[in-house]
Length: 336
Image (cartoon, rainbow, N blue to C red; front, side, top):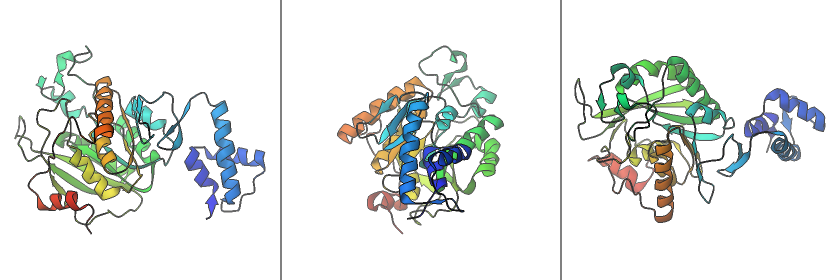
């Protein structure tokens, strides 16, 4: 196999100039196109990682089988090191992941757009706006989706995502109108999916029954299955114990389309932990983050219980709607 210094840079998230200095220091021979021998590749990995552990102020943890430098210890990590979750701001969390360390991003940001601009008072989702910042049990901090902030978030997603990989970003109708064009500036948008919640919800101007999912890529990669439609009939979670809880099937469908066994799935807006459960069901590794203490504690309990019993304590039954195509995908796995 042919290795290049770029492979080491991506694996260790090393700046090119720093790597060049290190190569000169160690007198490692490099071809004109950056090619190095297998022995040189291993030497660079071992020596640079060892030196980085000593001189770096930040601790280095083995997450999902890889050394990842982070400022804080994971809030929770499974015994097999396949699931790790952090309590942090989404952008800061992503900044502390190495470049090209994630295979799939599946996330549902807590957008502030509709809520902050309309402020409809007694919101079922996040509670009363008068309770914001007062530690109210129902309130959670939203992601302030200014154009600058959202683009910074997407650029970090692009950096940590490997080449030829997929990203799924959930949207409500309001955030879709304002933020979708920014996604196109960073990723290659491939399709707009619709999650049909089957049961009608609340709404001030027409009652809502759907949400959107932006499907995009970094580079070129085909879907695992050609049988997945662009409208997903999956019932909403009734009586959810966490606000904005999504069915695991929504995230499972994303992974049926884009993941392989042992892929690293990342969700910077963990929420209720549905994406983590979906990753475990799909035999994937998982990295998640949320700024909310309630989210992290809720997700930790849910993940631990599922790993022990294979039972989901916060979604006890399937929420698939009456859709034959969906049923076949979940019953038979991938279908070409």
